[in-house]
Image 1 (cartoon, rainbow, N blue to C red):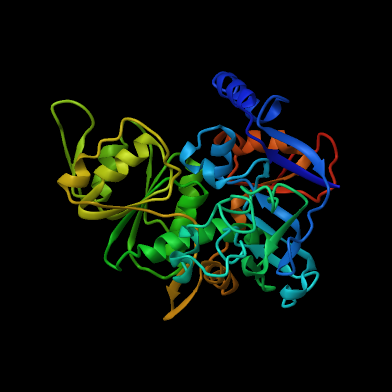
Image 2: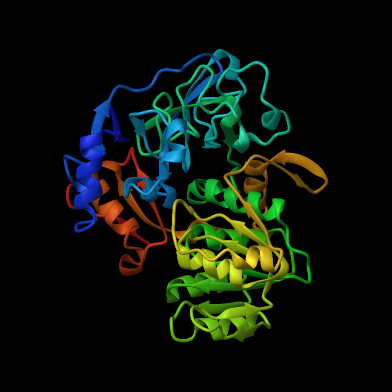
Length: 421
């Protein structure tokens, strides 16, 4: 039987969890009335001969997964999911079965999965314009074709997700891992590809000053991506915790600023050669700033900081999960003629004069030893110990966690807890 963690929207469950969760956050995953349920299901069948079945070794817990569990997702994304779905899109595993039209893969191949469910995986013969250009993350058919609606594996009821023992994926989504890339780096290929996509589509110049706001997994991956691509720009990182500061420095940030209410504005402005101006009232105004700001948090304060710490004519790239929020001052966008761009997932990129999939670039940089993200995987849990895993992932500062992953096929011993490296 297949052990899975499924998310199923039911209005009574949603209302109960939304209300109780304000006082007891863990109710989002430790209540029989929550939208998240642990259960057993039959193993998935291949939808057709172009698909493969993968036994999951590691399934990562992403910030977007926590955002989902805390019921913070915008309803604007709801047309692109199908309930109930098994969560998890950061996946490394082993092929157990391949369809007749996926015979380039063999049982036992170690693989990672690009989870985007675009036209090809949906069986749509005439690809949409974005897919024709290789912009699979912008596919307009995420609710069409042979599959139920779903942005990606981990949000579609037909495919399963990484928080389970087995999943199915289309052959176009499968990428072999070379021997030089271990499984812990493998589970980091997906978040690293998010960062690579962002940086390759919004590359700094060698003389630029870059500000990375947030040093969770994505922020650290952005720093690592810039350095792995050998871009010699100045990187300033605005971080929340000392552990994040140490890792930001390890992966190549030149200057680290701790997010302290009493001092961070002045310190950050100084590191960016910017001037702090005092308005009649309200937050400080910054004159000058970074050439490019990568915003990797998605909160009101982080977006306000991204906008005000970008120099005139500069660029703000939003990677954080910004949804519906109040209190953002957009004045600097028009006053300083800023360019504000979003970045979602991965697709194809120009790299070394060629067009190739983002996942290929991530794997190649790991193979060449230009980046090692395995130290970011700090905690590993069997799927049955999901309550402990999610408590750890949502309290990273106090648990000393960076990336928390499930081992869905690991034998569970009660009270074993997570393995902390």
